[in-house]
Amino acid sequence: MKKLFVTLVFICGSLAGSLTQAQTDKPMVKAPSTELYTALGGKESITRLMNDFVEILVVDPRIAKLFKDTKLKNLKEQLTDQICELSGGPCKYEGDAMKAVHEDLGITAAHFNALVEDLQMAMDQHGIGFGTQSRLLALLAPMHRDIIKPAR
Ligand code: HEM
Image (cartoon, rainbow, N blue to C red):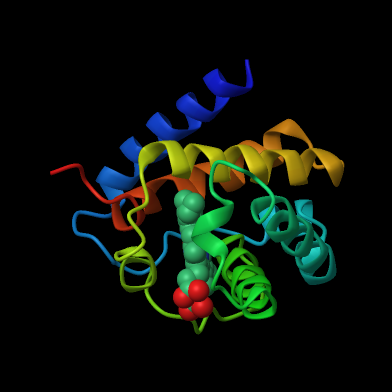
């Protein structure tokens, strides 16, 4: 069931992304209002969510090795700013572009889906409802184009 949800979000987000992002590495597609930011509980809740999300990522055997050289404090901060801004909050993501960050990591669709499942797990643990989860995942899904390395 969870896999089906991930796949559906991925497909819907990809479709939305192709309508809004004709090329890669365009500016992020943001929520049109602050509603999602508020539903996520604001900056403090997003900070806690991202901290826990990263702790889940780094022990997930499907993807942990990709994070072995990563400064986790920085990753948590960058993700917090990014999700805060994307969801309509008063933050500014000042990290590198998604393509530049991920292009040498060899990330596959399976890695991407694993990360989405980990984010869902973190959101479940934080009591974030299904509708709010879907809206956040739909904003993230179009980014797969800049993150997944196409098979040659
Ligand atoms: C929509 C999905 C994703 C988003 C929004 C995202 C976002 C980010 C952000 C904001 C950073 C920090 C950038 C910076 O420091 O300037 C980052 C770094 C990183 N991401 Fe992602 N990411 C996503 C998917 C993935 C996936 C699927 C993987 C692998 C399973 C991954 C692995 C990494 C790694 C290893 C780094 C650290 C790179 C380094 O240490 O230099 N990301 N990501």
